[in-house]
Length: 267
Image 1 (cartoon, rainbow, N blue to C red):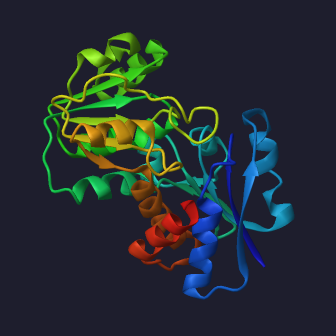
Image 2: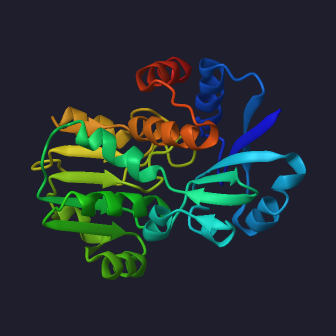
Image 3: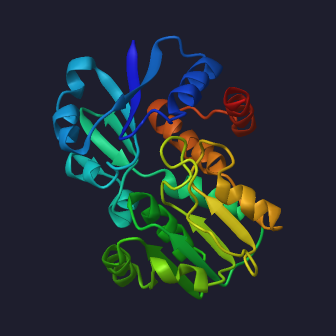
C-alpha cells in the first residue's frame, strides 16, 4: 500500500483526504491511501525525517509548513524556489522533491472569469500569500497592495516583490478591484465567525477567499450580498490538488466531478 497524506497545524478542517482518496478510486488505484497528520511547527523536521519508516510516497503541505518544507527537500522546483514556498513533497528518484501547485490553483479560477484588473489588495502575508503574489505579478497589475496584522511582515514582502504595504488598521481605506483573503479568518473552527473585511464592498469587482471550509465564508457571503463576483477557496483547492495528484501519480482527475464530490461531502 502506497501511503500519502497532508500535514499542517491545525489540520482537522482539511478536505485533502476526502478529495485524494476519491481521486484514487476514480482513477482506479486500489493500492493507495491518503491520511491527515497534524504536525506542530516544532515537530516538523522530526516528522519529515521519519517518513521513510512508513513508506510515505507523497505529502500535501499546508499552513504553517510551506516555507520550512524547502529546508528539508533534497530537490526543489524552480517555481517553488522563486515563490519561496512549497505545498507538495514527492518521493522521486530516491530523493524528496518539493514543488508548488498553489500558483496554478490560484490563477486558474481567476483566469476563467476573463476579467482584467488594474489593482488588487492581498489580506495576509503568510506562506499562503506567496503564490498569490506570484500569480498577480504575472497579470501585470498596476498596483498590488498587501496588508497584514504584523505590518513588518507585510513590509518585508512588499520590498521583496515591489508591492505597496498597508497597515491592517488602514486596509478599509482602499477600494481594490480585486480583494483576496489569504488569512485564516473565516476558516472552520476557531476563526469561522471572523472576517478579514468588515466594511463596504463598493468599487470591488471580485472577492477571492482562499479558505475552502466552509465553502462560503462570512467574507464571501457579504461580498455576494453586495453584488461582487466571488471565488471560493474550493476552486483553488481542487485545481492545486489536481496538479498535486498528477505529481503523485502521473494521472489527472476530472475537475467538475471532484467539485461535485466535495459539495456532496460538505452538505
